[in-house]
Length: 382
Image (cartoon, rainbow, N blue to C red; front, side, top):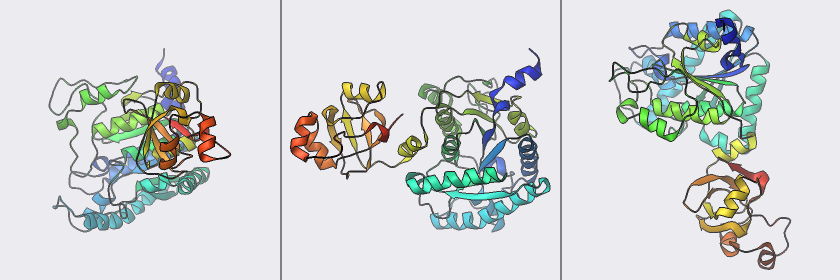
């Protein structure tokens, strides 16, 4: 098989919609200043593939690191929450200015999207974000997405790895590229072991794989970032399980971005698995739960294998306090979380009727339009 034929069959080369995640370690030089040569290389590669018909979204860290350089605080390592938010506020403006600058020669505009976990949990805001991203892509702009560091209390996305994977699933991307400062996933820590071997292809990411290749010393934060290989693998696992092909590669290697977009390798490839969640299900799984119900084996089989609604008869335990309409977690008898769903009863009501057949429930709660605990349409299974 020729190299050309191999490239055409590579799913990365065929992908039309691609999310690229860039961490602070890739965006910055050793001095902490933004790496303009990298950003120019990025703009050139992205514009080349956009002209070929691809749609590309960028999830970019670097606001705090950029703010440190602007405000002359490169020598300081520890900051209070308010200091980090002030640095992000200053740095994000500078970062977007540079993105606009490097894409301008190619006639491409960029659009800023700042997100928080709350945006994904709120159904209306979640829908608005998706519509805005779709419109930016329709206008042939490059969305530049970042966590809203100036307002969040806790960093919830892990150096934007998790955020980027959620975006890739949300926009139904065919490919997701995670740019790191290492060449990809190795069988052991390449910093500690000279005989570490790069893994060019990983068919499935398991919990055991993540634990085996990311001992604590391999997951340390970088000088200017807060992620690590563990968060990247978890992001890759989520995206691949949502039907997105994933690559982890070294953004510091010039030409690497073009190679990955062209399907010519350049890192570790994780193939997509069957897409399992629509946009509503993705929202349900991202939503913060208000409590949980534990269900028996028969109910677990019904909602997972037979795609049925959850009935109160299968509920064996209730945890937390919640109202009808709240999103709750659903666990099996061993405590494993099976998924999330919108509960039709309050915690007090489901406690009264758990384990009972529908006829008995009618006598307790009266006539209703529904009697399922969680309707199938309001269920999202992991």
